[in-house]
Structure formats: C-alpha cells, structure tokens
Length: 88
Image (cartoon, rainbow, N blue to C red; front, top):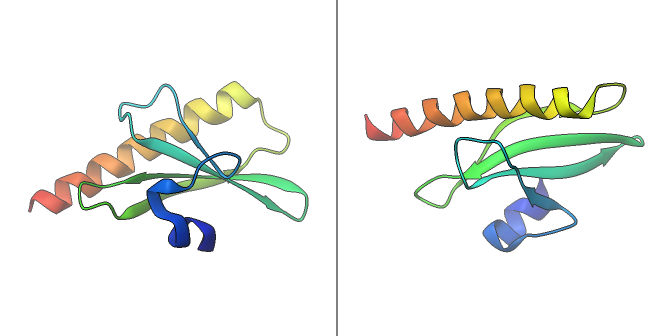
C-alpha cells in the first residue's frame, strides 16, 4: 500500500491494473504478493483524487473469473457508498 500512497494515480503496471467489468471506469486493482500468495486490493481514486481501498482478497485456490466477478461487485458497492457519503 505504501507504493500506492507514494505514487498515487501515476502508479501503473505491474503494481496496478485497470479492472474491466466495473460500473466505474477508474476502478483498479493493486497487485500484492504476500507469503507467495497473490493478493488483490480493489480501489479507486475518488473525485478528490484520494485512493479509496474498497476490498481485497486472496486469489489462491479460486476460480479467477468468479473471484473477479465477486470482488468487482463488492468494490462497486463500496465505492457507490463512498460517493454517496461525499455528497452528504
């Protein structure tokens, strides 16, 4: 997460990639390795350019398509809540 904080929106591959299938075009995944496991943290930069980490999960032992479908759904839900709270 420190690399995301340091480089912000300029951080790119191989650390960050854009997610396809999200309701939000700015939804991204931070690619992390922990103890040899592929961890993915889903985040977006809000209108104020703050990185909001929405959810994360370990890809090990899961169907990749199912993993991304479930995580994108969760990330979209959390990001919608965040945007709604900004408007209040």
